[in-house]
Image (cartoon, rainbow, N blue to C red; front, side, top):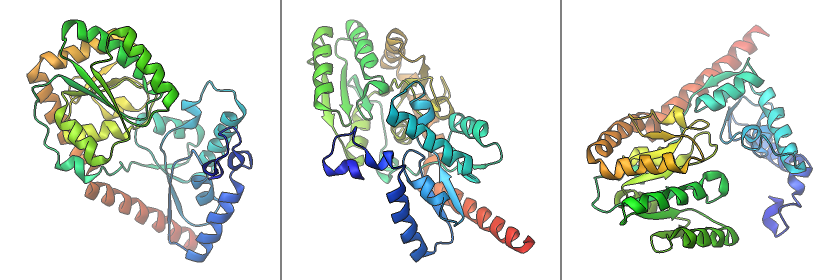
Length: 326
């Protein structure tokens, strides 16, 4: 990508040229390869458009939804990204959706599209984890550390929790820009939390799986998400989850059965649910068992592979039918 060559983010020539050079490069390779079917992931960049313009049978998997995540943004780059996403969505014949959020979005923009559900395979490290109730009162956040993920709401909730449970601690795993990290550290000082929070930066799957095992629960107070991998990973490990009732997350977590859901940006509600799980061993264990059982059905690589192959077969069969009827 052009922005990986040391140029500033605002100088995104790939986007300003509507990804045309990238699409042309991908098209040249595809014409050499001549695949039976293409499977493109995400409408955020050039991949969906390249696949859809290739002439080969194509399945598109939704990931983040730019038109929802950046709904209120009016900047030039964001407007163009939303426009290009809609261009791809309206061309789709076959699409893979994960939650009620992306299913509803596709239905509103392209009601003729055939929708499949193919969950993302989760790394084997999480299936190998066997979470048991730890003695420590450690919380875990996993994700890119940006404002949209609700990290500041989590810090405010932690300040409330610490007054009732002084031994509580928080590990934050994920990339964070240095300037924003310094802002968060200042906020921690103001809340009296500087000694109970660790910013760990990027962690491998194996490292996150180990963090699951030493944590009492994962807090995920995002303002908007479709199908966050970190939630799926915690479910596979059996780590209890408190998450925001936003976007596609309620399609992943059933409140009070496979996790706890709270309203976004409500630090008091988040603190209340965290305290409930820190003080209720039986509730933690029940949520863990139920979530893990469902997660193994959804996210096991073999289950995902089977769903993908079935979708490919369906799409290729439609190609044969169309050819025979022509």
